[in-house]
Image 1 (cartoon, helix red, strand yellow):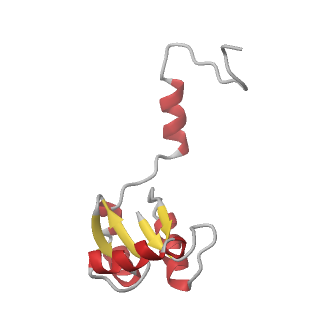
Image 2: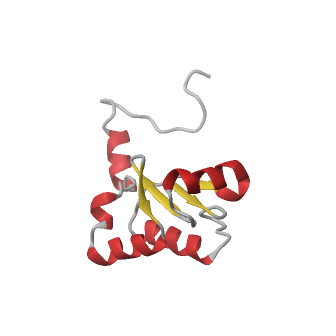
Length: 112
């Protein structure tokens, strides 16, 4: 989970933009929360995490850190071992195709 200013499509600060770019470059599957959308969460998370700035990256419920930490993890190669990857399209398609002996991909609902 990435707590950031704005959204991945529209980051509202340079640090958040850089964090999103790093995560996307490494194919990390992540969700985000715009801390500008809830002031209580924005202030509460700073106290909870004992981390005063944003963005903040959490993996499996644990604070990894902010942009500087993530940059260090990227440089050392550790980021790829810490963060879960998104499923590649080819793997997703293979999984769908092999879900049943016969698979039909169609528009609409087969019950109609």
